[in-house]
Amino acid sequence: MTETEWQECISPELMLAHLGERASLRKRRLFACASVRRVWLLLGDDRLRQAVKVAERFADGRVAAKVVDKARQLARRLREERETVERREATWMARAARAAAQAVESLLPEQGPILIAPRDVRDAPDVVSATRTARTAARAAEAQCEKDSAAAIELIRRLPALDAVDLLREIFGNPFRSTGIDPRWLDWKDDIIPKMARVIYRKRCFRNLPILADALEDAGCRDPAILMHCRAPVDHARGCWVVDAVLGMT
Image (cartoon, rainbow, N blue to C red; front, side, top):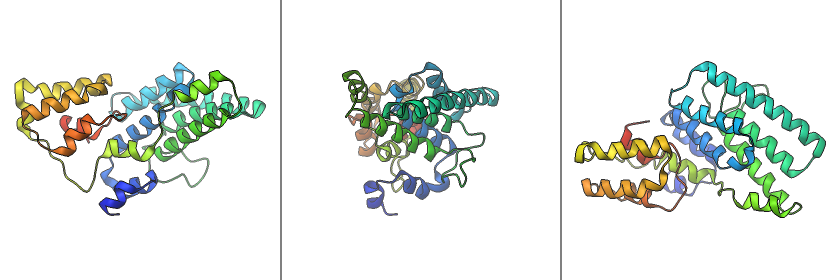
């Protein structure tokens, strides 16, 4: 794959395959979590939302295996309950709700995430399954707009745009260009830049990325890729390549 092909690619599976081992297990899982967060409204259950947060903490090595196992069992049970509803109601919204629960379940495989689809339906789901299922949930919900109430239509309108390839570029950046962080930027004004980045990461304060760009520029950063990414009016996510670079996370 060339740089132009990377920028124009519409298949997250091909992009992840190109990254190969350069895509760390942490970033793969955060990419999947960010995809599921874009159908947050369709989860409809705080227990599923908490399971997504468990998966994010799991990606950073901040949660015990038994907590992950409990979250996975819960997601599986809720997915099975929604499957029962889907068989009974056979509506697009029932399908969307089931797919959303299935996407959460896909974030919490028993083993580390892999980059290829499972060879058998009994295999543990992978990060590609999570992103694909999240898209299925969103598309099913959109289909319901043609038939359902104004309330359902309003719900769908509030869903963020679900473009997996843009989200993948948000997290992995451009693998064809090396972007370094000058240690002098990190030391500037009593380490204010890494401190800001940690707050953005931990509290999901992505609205503060333009402020981080201003601080980087004042510290001497002239890299247009870094500054433009921070100031871009797009939906950022945990795992953002600029924040990760500042914090030294891979």
